Image (cartoon, rainbow, N blue to C red; front, side):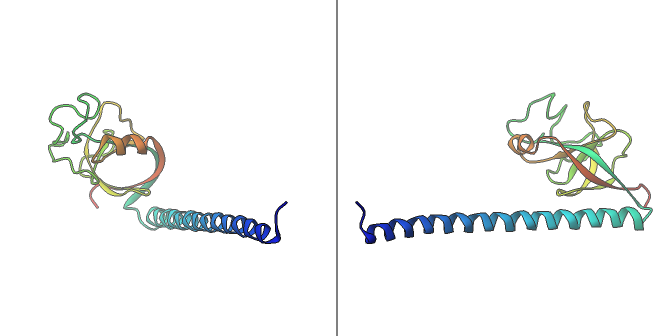
Length: 159
């Protein structure tokens, strides 16, 4: 039979575990709320750019990543030819270079939801008119990113 002291100790331990779990959940909720607020701000900015300016076109596109300069890049999959040079002849800059279909001219600035601003400088055999492929530093990053449907803001040429 447990003594009152032992019962109080066990109850205290259980309460501490519950409190610790609740604190952890509270932190996760705060994190998710912050991410949702950031996404909402991005959506509002994309809408503003699209509605207030004729300089931009906004659409949902299939976005992937590729890593041509990664040490474990696969020729024919991650790049064709020199992995450091894009189809436009510019250097690949992870985090800044994008590949798009021929419907988006080289040099076009694009904003990809949650990823930032890129410049279209590359092409790819599997990239269609509604696809964007973003250069990144590693194949692991590209694989982890996977394929996502994201809002892409395209700055019209000549502006």
